[in-house]
Amino acid sequence: MTLPLNQILPGDCTEILISLPENSVDLVFADPPYNLQLQNDLYRPNLTKVDAVNNGWDKFASFEEYDSFTRDWLSACRRVLKDTGTIWVIGSYHNIYRVGAIMQDLGFWILNDIVWLKTNPMPNFRGVRFTNAHETLIWAQKKKGAKYTFNHQAMKALNEDLQMRSDWTIPLSTGKQRIRVNGTKAHPTQKPEALLYRVILSASNPGDVVLDPFFGSGTTGAVAKQLRRNWIGIERDKNYIKVAQKRIDAVEPVGEEMLIATARQPRVPFGALVENGILSPGETLYFAKKGRTARVLTNGHIRCGKITGSIHAVARSLLDGAPANGWDLWFYKDRHGEKCSINELREKIRSKGQKSEVKSHN
Ligand SMILES: C[S@@+](CC[C@H](N)C(=O)[O-])C[C@H]1O[C@@H](n2cnc3c(N)ncnc32)[C@H](O)[C@@H]1O
Image 1 (tube, rainbow, N blue to C red):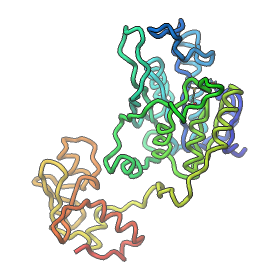
Image 2: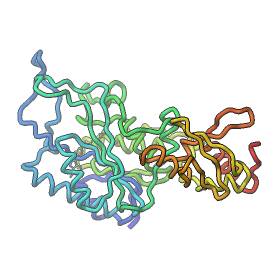
Image 3: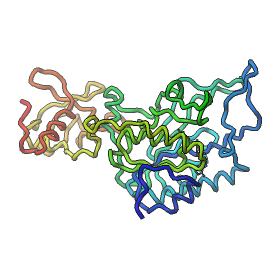
Image 4: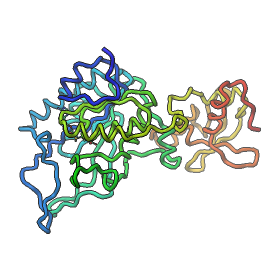
C-alpha cells in the first residue's frame, strides 16, 4: 500500500494508522487530547464564561482509560515511523508525564523536552494556583542511536545565529491566524503556526512525510504545505476536517528557491582543514569562553594546556563536560588579525564541493 499523501483521513487515528504501511513516515507531530478533566464550567470575575476545553474528545473515564488510549496510538505511530524518524508530542501537566513514561516504555528515546512559554496565557481566574503559562513538547526518536534529522544550522539561523534553546517563547494563536466560524473559535486548541514552523523546520526536510494523528484545525498540514513537506492528517470530527481542508487549500507553498538546503550537510572533519592547508599545524585557535587558546596538531586534533583531542572533546572538557559543538566554539585569526569562526572554513570546503579545490585563507 502506498501512503495517502497530502490528505486528511477521517476516523480514529489508531485504526487508520494500523492500515498504513510500516516504516514510511519521517516525522509525527501529535497534539492528543489532554484529559483536562474539567468538572464544571469556568467563569471570569465579571461572570462571563471561559472558553475552555470541555469537548467530548477530551474526556476519559479514568487515568487507566487514558493510558490505554495513549499506548495504542503511540504504538501505532511507532510502527509507521521510519527507523530514522522522530515524534513530537505536546501536552500539559495533565497528561505529559503519563505520555512521556508510556513513550519510554514503548522504546522511544527522548531527545529533548521543549517548554513552550506562552506570552499571553489564560489567567488563573480563581487565583487559587499559578497561571499556567506553558506547555511541554517531548521530542523522541523511534530507536535509540539511529540517525535522525535535526537541522541545527536552520535553528541557529532562525535564532539570530545563536544555538536554539529548549525554551520557546511563542504567543497563543490569536488575531488573524485564529480560525473563526461565525465569530466563534473553529477549534478550541488550535496551535500557533510558529510552533509547528519550528518543529517541522528542525526535524524534517522538504519532500519528507509529516503525519499528525490529531489533526484538529490542520495547523500541521498548513505549515507542512508551506514548507514543501508532504503531510497526512487524521481527524475524527467532520467539522474540524472541513475547517482544516479549507485552511490548507488556501496555503501557498514557499518558492523552492526560498528553501534553504536543510538536508544533512556533507560531513567535513576538522582534519580536512589541516590537510587542505586552510589551517596549519601549530596555528592558534581561540575558545569562545574563558580566554583559552589551543594549538592545531598535524592529525587534526588540538592541544589546550594538558588537554589534547578533537575540537569537540577539548571544548567539552573546557566546559566541564557540558555538551559542546567545537565548530561553534573555536575561532582562528584571519590575515587582518580578526577572530573568525572555524565554521566558516568548513562552509568554504562545503561550498567548493571538493576538498582539493580549496585554497588557503592565508
Ligand atoms: C488537541 S486537538 C488538536 C489541535 C490541532 N493541533 C490544531 O492545531 O488544531 C485534538 C484533536 O484530536 C481529535 N481526536 C481526538 N481523539 C481522536 C482519535 N482517536 N482519532 C482521531 N482524532 C481524534 C479531536 O477531534 C481534536 O480535533
